[in-house]
Image 1 (cartoon, rainbow, N blue to C red):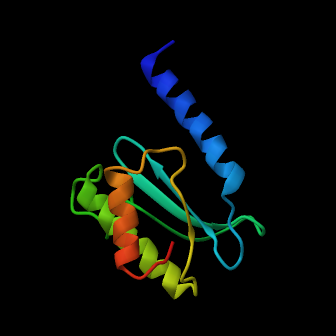
Image 2: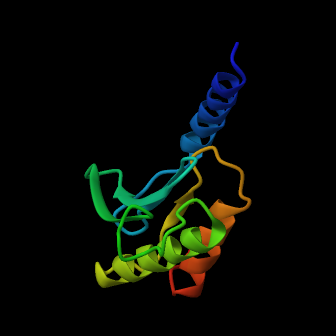
Length: 120
């Protein structure tokens, strides 16, 4: 099997294991992170209603200054999602790393969101 296909299958397996215990409630919605090669995306989701309450990504023009696949871009997205979540009336979330390792860009996003006032 292709090496990248193996990595994707392993990540999806980890994701299924995480989602058994994680879930977003109206009080503490789920903050889901997706990391691609060039971008990072994050959504705050209420799983009961099936609605996205806030979102941010490196594809937003005002968040990055050129490079989008690095740690500084991820931290700016983390800061933006914290501001948008607090503006929507959410102060605490459940962090869903979506099967990705808590390392690098994922960790930078989480630390920036915590630093901007989001609790998880």
